[in-house]
Length: 229
Image (cartoon, rainbow, N blue to C red):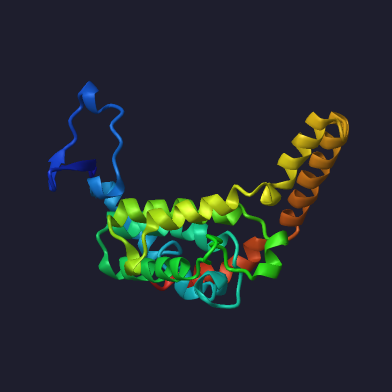
């Protein structure tokens, strides 16, 4: 049976993991880790499958508004990049890394002067769900930790700082948080708040269940199957 091993890099060199208490809670960046054996094979399978090819076969990622396209410009690209970037650097695959860098460069280039980083116009901001903005800020941090570089002359740290300042604007606060404030102020009762929250959750859940995405996604799984080795 193949041994599942992970090595950490000390001073730029790969070294066996040392089981001593001083390293029990040591924070390791992806660049500090070198997967081997079974674990590396699982990462390779991910790279050969959907995770490594969504930007080539799924229009919502391939033609996303995050990179100047006309398809979905909310959470799909951030969620994909959050896994794709570590995958590219853990495997030390320059081809995957270049594809990730293309997205990061487009995202940073699209950031507005006031820090707004999401792919929508000024008139759309009021109704844009800023959840995706927090996701993309996390993605930028992940990219910085993996690559250790600044992309396209942009400062990732500065981009995240400017984006978060915009997101802390109370006018953009999520509606459920505003509801809690209304309860605290006495504008609505706790029961009214809970009824609205329960309705929101049930309606969203019913909407997702009605999508039948398992059928829609089958074609993408079949396309990805051609890349497996």
